[in-house]
Length: 148
Image 1 (cartoon, helix red, strand yellow):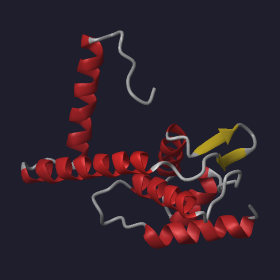
Image 2 (image 1 turned 120 degrees about the vertical axis):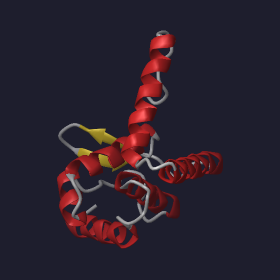
Image 3 (image 1 turned 180 degrees about the vertical axis):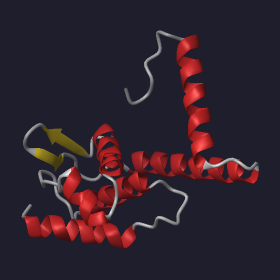
């Protein structure tokens, strides 16, 4: 993928990102890249912009883009080659995988709405989930956390 094409990807992503939404920007980025793969706009083997390039182009923090790329890598949509970059490594995911992702998103949005109704924000929810995860791992040390 040429630099012009990578700039085009950043512009397409920027057109769909909304900082006013409850959904974290990193999830929005990951979802949009995934849609680009599903729709065939991004093809297997194409190189994505570097974390820094995309962060600058989107006006986001590099950590936000890192989280998006990490999520895409965890899902098998991209792979990172040290010193070479991040590349699309998968064609469109199965519908069942996409539906599970949509259901998880719905669950998270519902949890955010309910937390907000109780006077808590997203950070409170994230902290509580982290505490629950840690307690669960402490209770069952032989379990490996999902996605690890």
